[in-house]
Image (cartoon, rainbow, N blue to C red; front, side, top):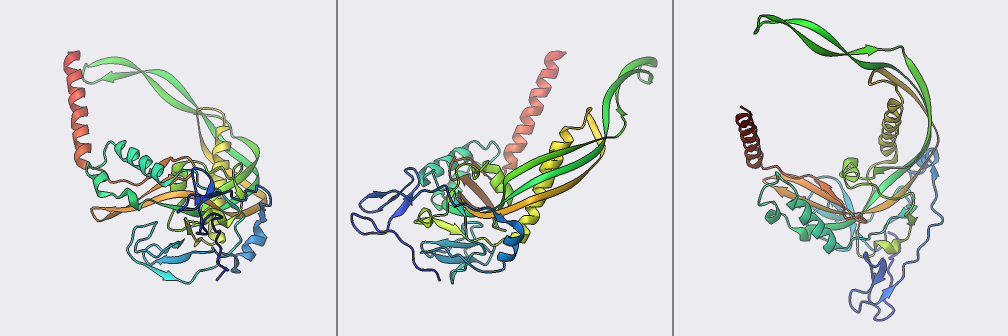
Length: 358
């Protein structure tokens, strides 16, 4: 167990917490404020091969937190107090456990900028904007259960060299005659077809900086992508545990080797999309790409999210809110009654337009 970390209020001596909107440490009692020691220096990119070896050893711990382990989704959350539900799946099956060490020392933190009340309001606006959500969804969810969590994220840097090949296709049109069985007469029509050209090839060089992969198996990467970018390349601050005071912190349970497998696939897919845009013509086939990576580095950082896990009619849903921008994304139930009414309305509009056109 790491030495307990706390910062005392200079006015009354109580433990301070990090206040998101002011980006300062604040006493919850006398409201006295202190600056957080901010540094953008000393953030290290770790050689990936060395990091994979270091990941086998336990190192850093999250201070002044107890850890709850969820028996449902496996998430481990370092938090300020014991409670009954999991942040990530909403299961009522969490138990206190010994504080576990992290595999690699964190290098950076993106601190919260959105306060809890603003996150709750953003969630309420999001629910109201859902056209096909059940009418009672707002009433069945508790915005008070929305929790701010520092999420562990693996970042990957890579220099990329790619060689690609493909056969380009060009859309062409021609006019052809055909016999119309209904009118018993010859007609003409315009037909679109693809003319395939000779094979083409090319090269692409690039550098990917901070490809982000969630450090939690219980929160897949598409939840992060749904709320937009985390500006780790510009706004990341050097690791400072003071930012964690008063907030939950999720411990990484996705091994670095597994995270790199996801990161490699993302780099491959992003490179392939860039190369495909270089293919001439309107379409293509037989695309192939050889990818070489060099200068591979990684680091463990923490980014801020609010998360709400709730159940609606015995099914689990999760909503994630960006802790710096307030952008909302996530799962939601669908009211098939509303969908059916919308389809009927659409058919009625089409029928009305058809009648007026007669």
